[in-house]
Amino acid sequence: SYELTQPPSVSVSPGQTARITCFGDVLPKQYAYWYQQKPGQAPMMIIYKDSERPSGIPERFSGSSSGTTVTLTISGVQAEDEADYYCQSSDNSGNYRMFGGGTKVTVL
Amino acid sequence: QVHLEESGGGVVQPGRSLRLSCKVSGFTFSNSGMHWVRQAPGKGLEWLSLISSDATYTYYAHSVKGRFTISRDNSKNTLYLQMSSVSADDMAIYYCAKDPGLAGFYFEFWGQGTLVTVSS
Image (cartoon, rainbow over all chains, first blue to last red; front, top):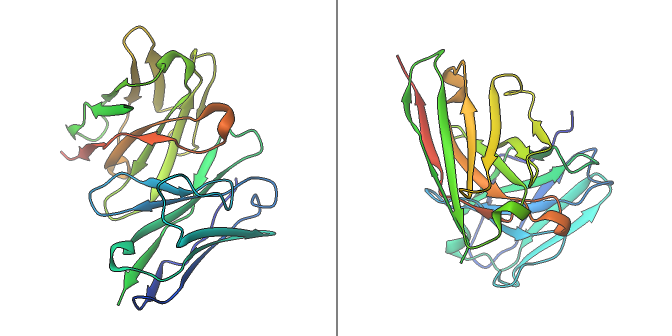
C-alpha cells in the first residue's frame, strides 16, 4: 500500500517562510493535494495538482513537486496560518486515497 | 451553495453497529462520487471509503474492509456508512466528502463531521 510521510511539526516566526515536505513513492505518478485544518474545523484544500491554488487561497501558499517529494511553502507566515496541514494523493486508479500523517505549523 | 451534513454519531458499545448518514444539497448528488474520511481524537485524517455516483463501485481502506459498508440513496440525496463490530480504534470524527469527478483525485467539499465514541 502507498504511504505519505510528513514531518510532525514545523515552527516558524511571523513573516518567515515555512516549508512542509511530503514524501511518497506514489508522488512521481500521482498528483498531491494539500489541506489546511484548523481546530474544530473540517479540512480545506489549499493546493491541488501539486502546485495549483484554488480561488480564494492567499498567494503566500504555494506547492511544488520533485520526484517522490512534494512541498508546501507558506511565504510570509501569518499568525492565522497556524494549523495542521495534510498532503493527500491516490493510487493510480484514483479509487484509493491516502493522507500524510499531518504537520502542525506553529507560529512563534 | 454546497452543503453536507453528517448525522448518526454518538456512543456505541464495542462490538456493536452504527449507521452514519450524510445529507447533501447544492449539487447533483446522483452525479457525484462520495467518500467517508475519519479523524481519531488528536490524530490525522484517514480515508475510509468511496462509492461511485450510481453505487456500482465501492472501495474501502484495509482498516475497515469487511466491517464497514458504504451506500447511498440518490432519491434522498443521502450517503450512508454502516459500521459493524466497532472497536476503540473506530472512535473518531467521521466526515463525508464530495468527489470532484474528472477534476482530480481529491476531496472537493466536506461536511463538519459527526463524532463516534466507542465505550462500554
